[in-house]
Each structure stands twice: as structure tokens, then as C-alpha cells.
Amino acid sequence: MLEVSGLHVSYGQSEVIHGVDITVKKNETLAIMGRNGMGKTTLFKSLIGVLPTTDGSIKIDGEELTGKESFQRVASGIAYVPQGRMIFPSLTVQENIETGMEVSRMKRIPDEIFALFPVLHEMRHRKGGNLSGGQQQQLAIARALVTNPKVLLLDEPTEGIQPSIIKDIANILNEIRKLRDITIIVSEQVLSFTMAIADRIIVIDKGKFIHEDLRENVDTDKISKYLSV
Amino acid sequence: MGGFSYEELQAILVMQGFAGLSLFSVLLLMALGLAIIFGQMGVINMAHGEFMAVGAYTTYMLSTITETYVPGFMNYYFVFSIIAAFLVAGVIGYFLEFSLIRHLYKRPLDTLLATWGVSLIMQQIFRSVFGAREVSPTLPEWLMGSYQPTDTIDIPLNGLFVLGLTAFVTGAVFYLMFKSRWGLRVRATTQNRLMSGAVGINTKMVDRLTFALGCGIAGIAGAAFTTIASTGPTTGSLYIVDTFMVVVFGGAASLFGTIASAFSIAQAQSIMEFFLSGSMAKVLTLLTIVVILMLRPEGLFSIKIRK
Image 1 (cartoon, each protein chain N blue to C red):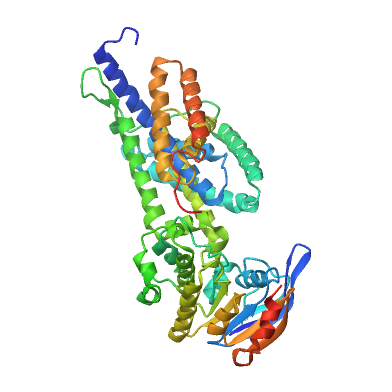
Image 2: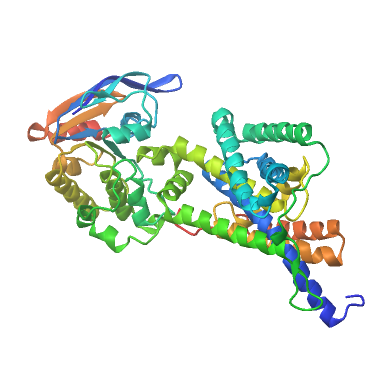
């Protein structure tokens, strides 16, 4: 499904991602864990094409994505929920979701979306900027889902969200996996959240992958040690 | 109010008020184009006035051509010339964006200088092609004359026409911006360019079409302008300052603000001009705007949301 090989990303002269390889299968959920400043967000930004890559390749179903613009990558089947949600604050909830429907050429927001996120249906005429953090997170996920992605990227979806809502978001993600054939890559610092959704966990440190394990075999103490400062 | 009777004063107010409405129409058409371009890509288009002149000269050319070759068509050509003005200015805008502006998006000061350069070049082109003297198209008969509700009040028909045209164009822009998919793309890009790309919007294409549309509307303003004044090579630059004032005063992100500020600036100037000299009227308007902007730096209307 998604194959990344030898990916290098830099800001000017300083390289932040030093050649990582990722292979994710269809319907698999991969969690990339690491402390702040280890390159999680940079990695995600380069996958969606907001940041240019210096070297390496990104392929979806064999189709090369490097060198393509963000909107073309979205059309190829990759969707992005950024850190900090970045919804459009002065568009209504409904309009926010509709911005994602450019590439999927849908006319109406599918009922499936409002079934997953009933709160968005309730608030569809409100401005996105007036929603709470958890609601904005759901909105950002909905906006990404209407592009009909093969691969969904979620960058720290639990950041700044209260624990009870974090559980809701984990449930929603598991629900989405049941409904669609979708590959999910999520970057996280909260181990309980990743254990609730991921099939496989990778730990990133200083722009390199240093540990990888299937969820069944994960030694939580060891991973916690990687995540503590 | 030195020697005017109550009835005369009333007539003056109505007629000056109406002259203000004509000025309002042209200012609003200009400001709409400028505001959507500025809102969308943060480009301050110093050549915007010249796109208005492009529209005015297009109208003049069509009028001359019609007069020479198909005089029988004189009554209708004006409608076509509005469409032609929109298309010509729009197409020139499209190519200007493609060849120059898009290379300068991350350098706002450079766009200011570059578009100013473009405006000088365009002015010189007008001067070389049409001459330095002001020109006027021959207006169709149905635009001449005036409507007289009472003995002392004279409302010119061309002013009414321009007002109607402005209402139509404003309505169309509102529909495009708030009801169409294209408008959604524009508003999304305005708020967050990077994220718009990351949800699948081709932001560069949106930029180019927005720029073309803004210039096209300036072209319509030019066509409308020919009915109330004559066109010279520097006509555009005379209007650009007022247009900027309208956009800043109204609040760059708000179309309602643009309308309200165009209305108040045009009315204030037109009514004061009758009682004071033209430059005093301008000074007073500017002073008022400066004071209001000091109190409300974001302009008359700004959208209230959590940030």
C-alpha cells in the first residue's frame, strides 16, 4: 500500500529525517511514537508534500508521489490530519468538510460521515473556529475522510484533548477501519491511545527508527522508557 | 448654509447623494476586485487601476468600431462592451499572474514594486496607442438624458444604469464567493494555503483564476466609468488610492465591509464637495478614516471567531 524508502528531509542545511523506510500494508494501523522534536511532524509533512523531500521515494500502490504537489497526492489517495487540527476557522463545519470533497467529486456529504461524527451534524452551521478542541479534531478527521483516502495520516490526534475524548477518538478510528479498507499512520506520544488502535508500533528518535514491534509483543515499559525525557 | 432655501437644499442633497451613488458604484466595483485579490493571495495590486482603464479603453474601441462599421448597432454595443471589458481585463490579468505575480508570492514588498512597474508600463502603452488626450465612447441614446421626479431634481440615467450594473456584479460576486464550490476553494485558500493544498485543493489554479476575476471586475468598473467621465492614460491611477482606502477601511476580509466603506466614503466626499472645496472634502474624509482606523485597526467589519 504505502512504501517509503530512504526518505531524507531537511530544513535548509540541517537534515531532520535521516533516511527512513516504512512499509504499511492495506488495513494496517501503524503508530509512530517519539518525544517532541524527534521528527514525527516533519516526517508527516513530507509525506503529504507540505515540505519537500531531499531524497528517497514515497509510493502508494506503486505510484511515485515525490515531486507531486499536495493536492495531487491527495488525489492519489493520501489524506492528512495535521497536528493542531488546522481546520478553517471561519468556514462552517459543513463547508470545512466540503473542502475535502474537491478530489472525490462528491456532491453531498455522505451520511456515513455524520453517522461517525454525530456532533458535527448537530453543529454543521457553526463556524469551525467556535468548536471545542475535540470537536475540531473530529472535524479534521471528517475532512480527511471525504477525500476517500487509501492512507490516512494523523499527526498527534490526542494533543491537547481531554482523556475521555481521547477514548472516543480511538473508538472512532477503530470504527473507520471496520467501515473502509484504509491504512492509518498515526504519530503519538500517548501509549495507551496507541495500544488501543495500532497493529504495529515504531519508535522514532532523532530522525531515525530505533525500535519496531507488533502490538501483541510490545513491552510497554521499554517503549515508555523511549518516550520519557 | 449660505442662501439656499430649504427646498433647494433638499434637491442638492438628493442630487449630490445620487452623484455619490455613482462614485460609490465605480469605487465598489474597483474595491471588490482588489479585495478578493488581496484577501486571496495577499498581493497588493498597484496596477489595479490600469485594469479599469483597460476596460474603459475596450469600451471606447468597441464604440469606435461600431460607429464606423455598423452604426445601426450603436444602441446595443454597450452591453457587449461590458462583457468584452470583463474578458479582456480578465485575460490580461490571467497572463500577468502567470508570467509575473506567481513568482513573487512570498515577497509582498516586491509585488508592490513589480505591480507598480506594470502600472507604469500599461499607462505608457495607453498613451502610445490612444494618445495622451482623454477619450470618451459615444454612449447609446438610452443612456443619455435624465429622470426628473420634481422641477429641481435631476437624476442622470447613466448613473442609474451604473448603479444597476454594480448591484448585479456585486450579487454575482457574492453568489460565487459564498454559494459556489469555487468560492469555497477561495475562502479555504485565503484562510490556510498549506492546509488547502493538503485537503486536495489546487491552490495555484485558484490563485490564477481569482486574480483574473479581480482584474475582470476592474474591467467592468472601467466600462461603467466611461458613462460618467472620460478616460485618459492616468485615469486608473487617480482611482487606485480611493480604492485602497475603501478596502482598508472596510476590513480586508469582509465583502460587506467593502460595500459599507465604499458607500460611506463616496457619499461623504460627494456631499461635502458641494459645500466645501474638493480637496477639503478629501482631507476631511481621510482624517475621519484615520481616526476610525486608529480605534478599529481591522476595519469596519471583521469576522469574530476564536483564534
